[in-house]
Length: 113
Length: 116
Image (cartoon, rainbow over all chains, first blue to last red; front, side):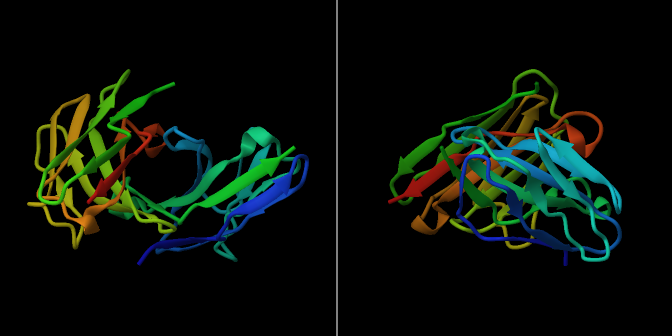
């Protein structure tokens, strides 16, 4: 079945450090891929998405490229800020199964000044 | 942007009691709502999908008589955990989809249920 595997946290970084959170997936067909972010006390928010191979999603300095050959969608940011501290979820949508999302376990990021 | 309000954010109850969790779309009509649960350090697991005015579709392994879902209006869905037991303790999250594509999918802030 479809699944998403993302690196376990927590990830602890200093401000302005480079961030990578790995995400790989297993899916039939050609899913859409997403990164969601959950700030403390808030709901999940869509951070970025990619709908086909080689697409690059980007938002707020974060980027992720849909790599079909490695079935990956790693999240990167060149210089993190304290305000980026949150839980990040990688997810996929199997269009054949409808629009419910399949999530990874989430990775907690803590950025200190 | 679109907001989904989920209430309560935290609830503690005694074993055997029922707990109702509400999920409201505040500024859009949610034709479809999804209910997820999350155990510590685990993925969000889809429990059920509900469309306004029709019965919910439950995922395999989810007891429909234990987790009652009602989606009576385009802005409100409720999840009732009936006769709760300690193993039902979990984090429950709702999401609501506006008309259109998956990009118009919004999440509540979740409910932490603790059953004593």
